[in-house]
Image (cartoon, rainbow over all chains, first blue to last red; front, side, top):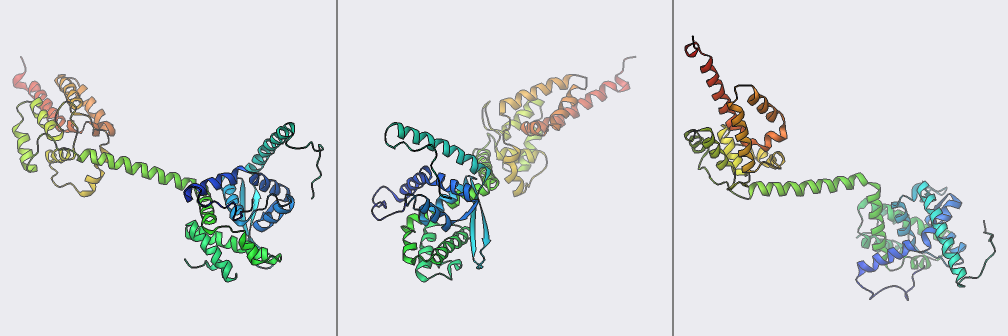
Length: 139
Length: 254
C-alpha cells in the first residue's frame, strides 16, 4: 500500500476526484480490517507502532506510510470505530493512542465474516491454495 | 504558511514536509495543530527506532495529495464529533432561507389601493362606512392584492396599522412580520370569514362574541385573519348599540 512514484496518480482526472477515489480505495481494502484486528489484539497502539506492526505482520504486504495511515485512522474515528487519547511517553513526549470502540469490535466481526467468505470463494476458484484449518499466528 | 510550533524540535526538512502537507489539508487551527503534533510524534518515533529521516519522509507521499486526504478525513471526523452543531447549522440555514422567502413574498407586490398617508387611509376608511360590507371591502382593498386569490402585503399591513392608529412601526417589527404572517388568509378566505361573522352578529345570542374571542385567542388564526380585527370592533359596537336600543324603556311595548 506504500505509494511509489510509479503508481502515484498524476494525469488521472482532476485532483479532487483523484483524492476522493484514493480515499475510497483506502477504506475499501484490507487496511481498515487489519488496523481494527491489530487494535483488538493489542488493546491500544499509536501511529508509528501500527505502521510497524502492519508491515511486520503482513510481510510488507500492508506497508503503510503516514499518507495512508492517518487518513485511515481519522476516517475510522469519524465512523466511531476507534477512539483516540493523547498521553505522555516516559520520555516526556506526547503520543496519540488509538483503541477500538464497541462499534469497532462489531465492525471487525463483520470484516472477519466478509474476508472468510472471500477467502473461501477464492480457494474454491483455485486462486488460493487450501490452507490448514488453524494457521498459527505470531504473538 | 509557517511550520506549526508542534514540529519545532524536528529537523528542518521534516518541518517543511509536515507544513506542506498541512497547507494542502486546509484545516482549522485546532485541527492543524493536532495533526501536526501527531505527524511530528510519528517522525520522532521513527527516528527513535533508528530509521533514516529521508526514509520516513518518503512515506509521506506527495504533499498535496497527502494533505488533501488528511484534510477530508479530519473534516469528516470533526463533523462526527459535533453532530449537534452540524444539525444546528443546517436548521438555521433552512430557517433563514424560508424566512427570506416569506419576507420577499410579503414585500414583493403592492396592494390594490395605496394610501398617500396613514391619515388619508384612516379618513378614507371612515368615509367608507356606509355599510359593514363596503367598509370591509375597503379594508381588503387596502391590505390585499387584487382578486379573490389576492395576497396580504407589507404595504397592506402598514394600512392596517394606520387603521389601528399606529403610524410609525419600528424597523424591528417590520423585520419580524414574515414570522408573524407566514401564511395569511387570501382575500377570498378573509371575505368568507367576515361574512360568517356578519351572520353571527345578526344573531341576538352570544355566538358572535364566543366565536370572535375564540379566533382572537388562537394566535395563529388571529394573525391569519388579521384583517377581521377592524370590523370586529365596529360589529361589536353596532351590536351593543342595537341591544341598548332594544332594551331601552321608551321602546318597550306596554
